[in-house]
Image 1 (cartoon, rainbow, N blue to C red):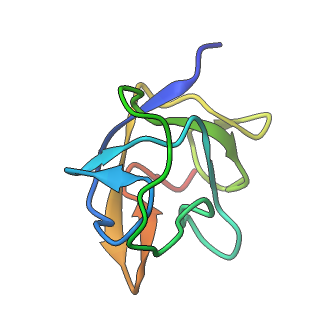
Image 2 (image 1 turned 45 degrees about the vertical axis):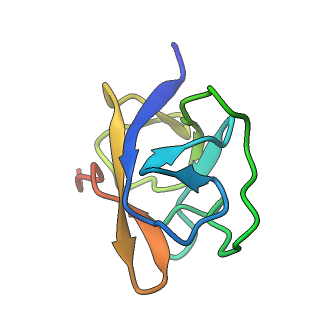
Length: 93
């Protein structure tokens, strides 16, 4: 299994987001819902330049792409939702 790439991110206030591209090495999805738990609102930018973010873990057991707490989607997109990012690729089993 390969890590799943984050194609785009609409959470523009996130420290890992530069020009709608996530630069976190690996994000975690899902605590209370399909939110990006790695999201961090900050004006200082973090992450690794030149790296396209990936999904490190998925805690959304009810997602059809969740296989043993790992994401099996071809890729994901993160959308802006109530001051944080949500996985727009989430699909209930």
